[in-house]
Length: 247
Image (cartoon, rainbow, N blue to C red; front, side, top):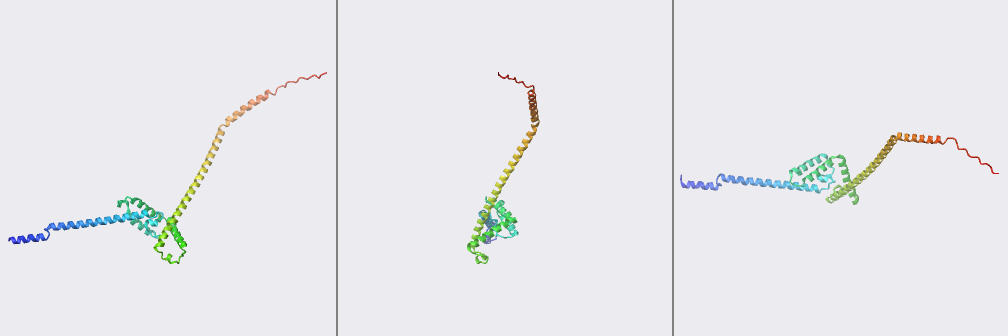
């Protein structure tokens, strides 16, 4: 073999990237790119989780629609679907965020409230009342353009008024509960006093019955002594001396 041919092959091998060594380098670079992309996606998912957790914790907790980020009046299927997606996103086992448990509990509570038909009806009524109050304050009616196609400003005012209505309703409910507890306390005290009164009466009756023989014996003893005294005093009376008249 000629020296020129050998040198030519060596040059070709150098140009191709040192044979198998070049392939290894390319594979390493490709894997680095994949790892970097996965890290980026992981960071993006964590950011989404953190953002959702923050949103839930800042939402007005008396408004379950707000906690779940749902439009008022949606159906049960939408409520279930929304909860399923968000609960998987922020589940404490799937994120390092220390606030995840609190956010998850609030999300679960909101879903439970909306799945309760009576609670959902009360919430829908409060939202409707808030809308009516806004319309009354602004002199609007059902045919007003601002009501038919509400602006972002109208919706913002509506949400704030909804908070006010819900807070007012909650305060009223707590006052009723407090009044009811006080009334129950007074009733319980009255029942206890009546029970104590009956107890004292029973104890008095029992004591009276237990001392019955003693009372009868005492009376008989008294009667006996009294009878003897009467018999002793009933003997012959002492005769009075006759006084002789003077003169």
